[in-house]
Amino acid sequence: DTEIYYDDDADSSHIEDETVAVLGYGSQGHAHAQNLADSGVDVVVGLREDSSSREAAEADGLRVATPVEAASEASVVSVLVPDTVQPAVYADIEDELEAGDTLQFAHGFNVHYGQIEPSADVDVTMIAPKSPGHLVRRNYESGEGTPGLLAVYQDATGDAKQQALAYAEAIGCTRAGVVETTFREETETDLFGEQAVLCGGVTELIKAGYETLVDAGYSPEMAYFECLNEMKLIVDLMYEGGMGAMWDSVSDTAEYGGLTRGEAVVDETARENMEAVLEQVQNGEFAREWIAENQAGRPSYRQRRIAEKNHDIEDVGERLRDLFAWAEETDDESTENDSE
Ligand code: NDP
Ligand code: MG
Ligand code: MG
Image (cartoon, rainbow, N blue to C red; front, side, top):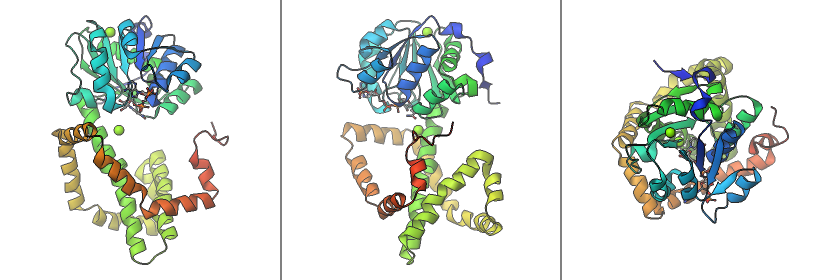
């Protein structure tokens, strides 16, 4: 059974006397660092000398040092720089980790695929908020919480899980609930989800639907509304009340058509393709490809980004979003309309 931990399961004594080095002050870093500090934990932010994040961290009242200095001082090192630069940053700070220290992650990629191999005498844990950093911060300040994942890769001290729970409490995750998982499960499900369903699957489904309509002579504006814009309305309903709430809310015609025709689109072949994607995640093929792509300076990534940007649907969408008032509200999370 899936364990879920809440505030009552966490004991702040496992973190309150530690110094936590937060490496990176981006999406997750700024949220973890400020939440930890507001929870009374001693925090030092680790940033390179010429870091563009330094000003923000200092303006937020935090102490800033280099990653090496921060790791040297701290007993818990939270690695919150981008996944692709973590191995290089880790190589710099590796010697600063002492026996009994903790190396903490928010995603398992580098440890799971052997890009970072921590020595056996440190605790290696993960607290992964299931939300972008600005929400981790906002929810903490508003008294709400952000759900998260907890995993222990290596427990050298016997205290790894308790300390990770205390860290999760200090950043507000146990208010909402923390689910226990493993580095392997978190990494593989995260990669599969973003590739097959969330980022890759959804964009290809939308483009394929859009192209099908446009190729058949329908107007690009209509195709955009039907295949992209309305996606949000459908997803919002499923997010709030599951598939059932969505089926209840659409017309009977939409429900019958969806129930009978959806399977024809995502058919057995599509499922086999999904299995192939999962296999490349599990056997490390995707990880090796992505690491090599980065080492080569991202040539293929760059090309695909340009192609995606040049797709017709992007021009149509830009024009329509400019024309309609609804774009105002969804454009920027920090508008005055923000109803909280
Ligand atoms: P960001 O891309 O937001 O991190 C940027 C920060 O890292 C900046 O402060 C940047 O400072 C610093 N940085 C970049 N390169 C280097 C370097 N070479 N040396 C030192 N510092 C550097 O990262 P995220 O917050 O998105 O991701 C951090 C971790 O959290 C990842 O493991 C990610 O998978 C995980 N995660 C992210 C989520 C998200 O929503 N973003 C959700 C859950 C987990 P500088 O100005 O120096 O470049
Ligand atoms: Mg420790
Ligand atoms: Mg992801």
